Image (cartoon, rainbow, N blue to C red; front, side, top):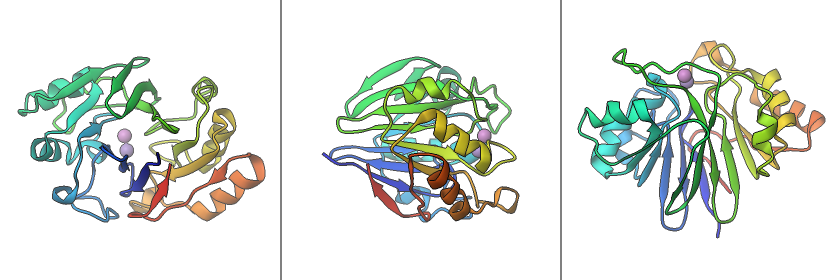
Length: 227
Ligand code: NI
Ligand code: MN
């Protein structure tokens, strides 16, 4: 049972299993690099790591159109409920929930989380996803932290890490994060969306190859990898 993971640019990912489509941090219509528009995406689950506009910009419109379950911290679930989205799964750091396609754990992230209208967005998070055939970790927006070593204890088939720097960890720390996590494969995200977070992903991949045992996976927006 293989699943397909597609990078939709920036911090947005679409995970397609045989029966389900899981969308992470929908930022499409205003993203300079997104290969699709918000009204072209199907989803039955939407994972939201934190409240910043570049992670929730298309959340409400896609949730309304698709009826997808919004999985996010309690505060973001309340925020979408206030906009007519009743199908939510609130959770918080350290918690896990079994969904029809796999188990979701909300993991630590060192980042902030205000919502676009200034509402309190709770605490930023990452996600650990246990699918029937693979375990995936999305660090989402975060600084490097040593407890990544514990997250890696789950045995990661793929880790997705930000490398853009400035608002998240940069390439150097993402190599260190790879060492702590020990995933089989690692993919970069949250870079090259705008000039302030431009990075040389190929150079980063070389560092990953020479300093870790992980295989770097470089995708262009719109490209997929089997997971
Ligand atoms: Ni952010
Ligand atoms: Mn961000």
